[in-house]
Image (tube, rainbow, N blue to C red; front, side, top):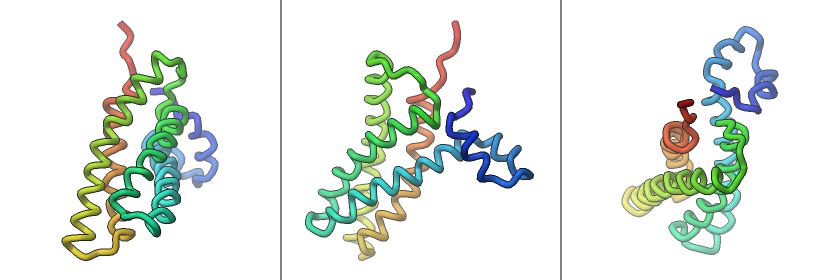
Length: 152
């Protein structure tokens, strides 16, 4: 497995005794770091717009901005998929966005049930949904989108 390019920088933030453990889980930890940034991008788009538009309309708008940001950072820093030529990027992006469509529907469903059925504020429901969606997105990206090609 190629080492995520961000790992040497993140490693310096970890106490030396824990570094072997963080090295073992470097890809997941890099994904988690950028996942936090991706979640921040999503919330930065979502919350201001939710003040003027219905939350179920705003969520797909925030999703789109998040997908573009997340694809770029996952490709470059987490899964070290180095090629940016169109023949590589287009299928990767379509596969990545396709997987994220599933998570968009999951999040929309969670938002609706949490807000309309359970009566929880949409902001709190969105934060809870973000955790579940992050795990689903990680496994989809790792197993299907940025999987390493075997040498034949």
